[in-house]
Image (cartoon, rainbow, N blue to C red; front, side, top):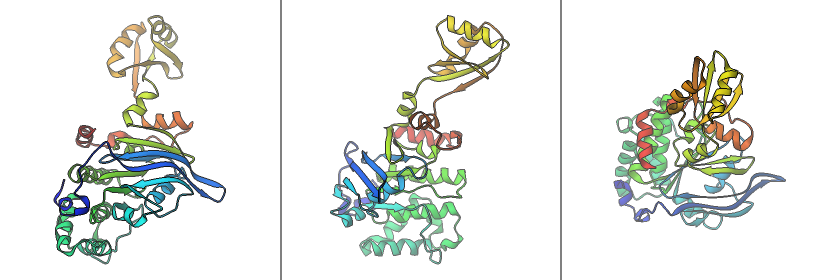
Length: 341
């Protein structure tokens, strides 16, 4: 746990990754007759990255507004860091950091001045402010821009500074609202490296709302929300595994013969316009055997593993958006994150 946490009595607590730091029981939030959130329940375990995945209008923002005391629940019970959001909103606010979708920094101030202003608002002890500023800037790799005006920052740098600002008062839960519009994929990857590093070094629980599949892939667990209800909740791997096996599509010189031959030897197959689709475990490993069993020359092979797009389609009957390549997530980030699971 990093130095800024050890200095604050509020955070001298043992980290128990089995203990929920967010507890939601039968939450309902209505606007007139419309239920934006319709009876959802879930827990977020201390130290994990938890993602709320769903399209615009699904209830993500409404839920996070309730969790952050920006909106009152119509019904249900919500605890954050052990405090009821309705009965003890100030205690909840002391224990959370919130990064909004839209930038809320003062671009006429320097990075340090923005952080110092936040420290005053949250009554950070004056003898700890300088150390905390140095530490949070180090976590987001902005130490060398400490005295620069925010107006000179790129969109990605400003986003990382907002994350640093949210950490100044030592929150137990960091809420990241919808990813900002206009950040290029490389900048978003760098931002996520910072987020994962602060979780690694500071033990912060991260609660993310997003409609981007590649963002959700960083999470330890994902709750898929649609029309105000949670339709699935599990790890990314478990969600994808639950909807079925890999598929291998073969285009051959005679797809009818290939389909019949593969079916005879026990494969689960389906004739598709592209040729023959075969459902198997570990599709890449199965390719040589499938080519041999097809009995006719193979022109092309395409292996498809279930994705979060497939998961969302399976549970809601529609796609959340056009497919977004998961390849944008660098191998170093995947490996780092997988060690945490």
